[in-house]
Image (cartoon, rainbow, N blue to C red; front, top):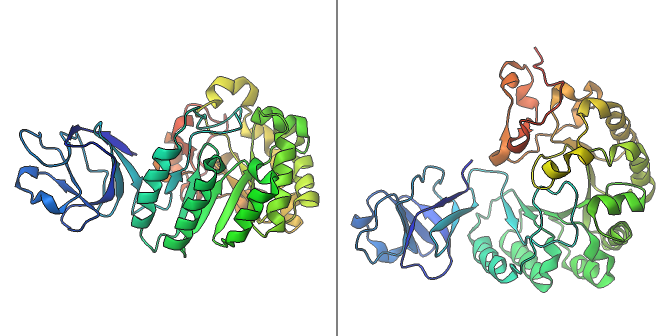
Length: 373
């Protein structure tokens, strides 16, 4: 799915954020026009067009190859180099805000490897303009990174803006949780009493050295666990996330028991299939294990937590290679813009209930993929 395009910029000297329209008007609108030269342009923030710019004073991006991926009401960011990024899709339930690409961990299987650059000013400005434009009936919105808490004060400023502008929207924020080991950070979040927000925090082993190896950060396990307790004391909603691969499978049941005994306050526990993206291809020999070969561990761990009354899900899994006794816990979790199905799936009777594949990983999949007839 196309989320970025580029054309020839015209009279652009700064970032422009706005809703796209094919016919509307208003101060926040960016007009998509196939006949830009006939447009009454002063009332629009900018123009997006497949037209050649020629000699025009209109601010916008021209000669864009294709704009069919944009719908009425989508929010875009227009850059001075002619890049047009889709920031919010009106017809999708998989919208997210990238708070930063920086991170204090360096996970072996990170799907979006961190970048050591200060993007705080740019992304804070981008999201400060985007959030007020998001429809008030938006059902859910994700926050991701990098590590979002590295924005410092601006992390909380953006959360306050989300709470004010989108009071009925469920917010899911991915974080490694390490910043919350410091009580003042956890308390600041707790003071917000942001009941619509849940933090998705990874824990990969009950053994600290193993977790630290997976995330490639010293003392990460201890910081994460301290952070979890600090957040729980302030009634912050928590989801625990476990990625399934060679490093996590051997102690998976022990981890499940650790979670029940020590982290029972978690609102949700997710077991997640590996995404073949980012660092994963480079570390594939340390990570890849055919899901068929960890069915027993997954089944035992999921049913243990479920039997103990915890809310459990399995993400990024294909039904044909998942034990039937845990099908009820599988979810269609892969974002729509990177979700595809194998050719074999076309004749499968349970495709509509199956999570499918990451587009990046279609070439690396289980040997057991087979249509259920």
